[in-house]
Length: 107
Image (cartoon, rainbow, N blue to C red; front, side):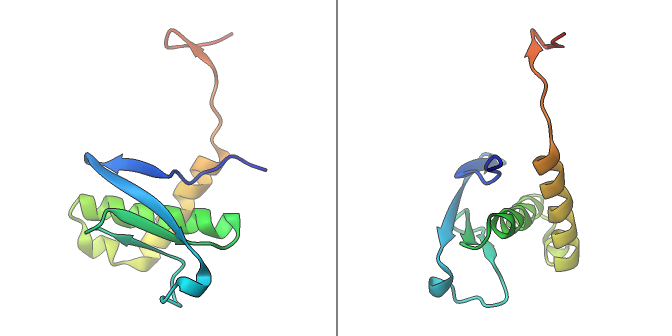
């Protein structure tokens, strides 16, 4: 199994953002598999396949960041948000890290 790409919490502009999960039967939004609530600083992800949950998380993360930047009109552009989230998800899922020593690449 791959590494987990969904944190339990993180910060954006100093605000603590919590990530929570919801069972599909307890979810009222049939057209969405996730939601960012800027009032509670919470991203909710519906429990589905790992791939779907990761994509939903990154989609809501993009909304969170755009709203923090005051880019509400851009955040309302679901096509942009979904495409950006897909690219961000791909970048993070395929990222590799090399060990470093004293700020220099090892080897």
